[in-house]
Image 1 (cartoon, rainbow, N blue to C red):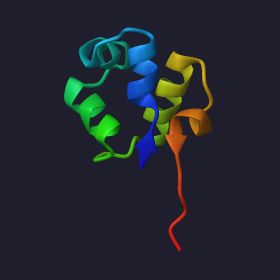
Image 2 (tube, rainbow, N blue to C red):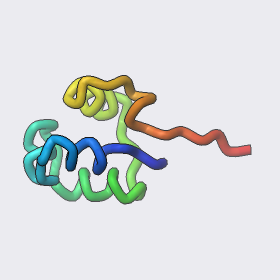
Image 3 (cartoon, rainbow, N blue to C red):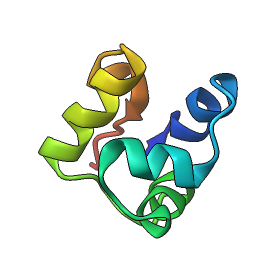
Length: 66
């Protein structure tokens, strides 16, 4: 799943480690989310959305599979 996490993180001049600390996850989780190798749990998706002051739909780009 594509996300705007990296774009939003860079806009706020945050490192991956800083974002990870703020969300209570590892830096590796942030790396995996940004590269699309990991899909966030619903709880983590809400945490990320709240952190950036955005809706989940503004951060996570969902494309339905046929």
